[in-house]
Amino acid sequence: MRPNKLKQLWAEGKAATNVWASLNAPVATEALAHSGADAVVVDLQHGMIGESDAIHMLQAISTTDTVPFARCPWNEPGIIMKLLDGGAYGIICPMINTAEEAARFVSYCKYPPDGQRSSGPVRATMYAGADYVANANAEIVTLAMIETKAGLDNLDAICATPGLDGVFIGPSDLALALGRKPGPDSEDPVTLEAIDRILAAAKAAGKVTGIFCASSEYAQRMIDKGMAFVTVTNDVSLLMKVPAQMIAALKVR
Ligand code: 3PY
Ligand code: MG
Image (cartoon, rainbow, N blue to C red; front, side, top):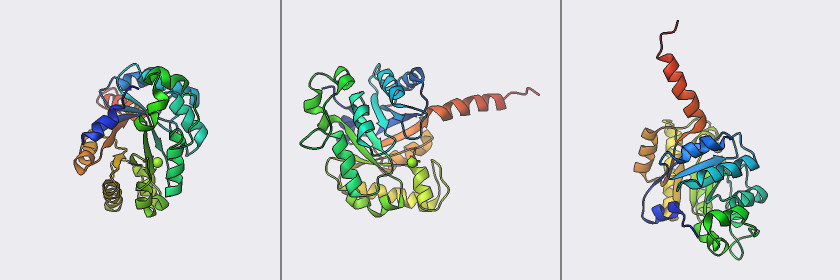
């Protein structure tokens, strides 16, 4: 099976980067996959992306060595298993509140006896190799998002989930859960304290931590703290920010 580059990087204690794809535009996804990021995350939770869009986007990513990742819309087995069958090498699951939810999430990503994933890796086998089913449990990355009050309360139990590779911080939902202003790259002390708490709990459990960021400066700060997986930007903000800056720089009228 094609090895999962993220697992290799993390085993060496190295951090990995990702860019986030929210638009149902496979050629744009392909461009993101050529950015040099270690992974591209196809976001089916908040992205404008349906199931078949996601498969086309995973195909676009796999024209490169960039690792194809997806965020599922919810902790639901049907879509998680279809994304894996479509060649996703990692799943980020939003809004994990309890250890029981985390265990269910992991079970959807792993074939028996480790989980309850159903066998039918139609495209995954083309991407990964004929020995996919035998090795997928070890190669597929599972990340549970910690971004709710319950998730914070149950942090240690979630981090202890067998087979879970790590946690991923959604700073906007996390801030909302704490009664703070939502948004990436937060400087709010209460949100930052929660981010540190999540990182420490995951580290104590031997798990990696990732976080959604919106700039390389903030992503670097998070890597320096010990984060293993950082988002640096997403397609929508790239499309909105750069033309806006260029137009603002002109003296048109
Ligand atoms: C959040 O910030 O809540 C996220 O889920 C990142 O997309
Ligand atoms: Mg979120």
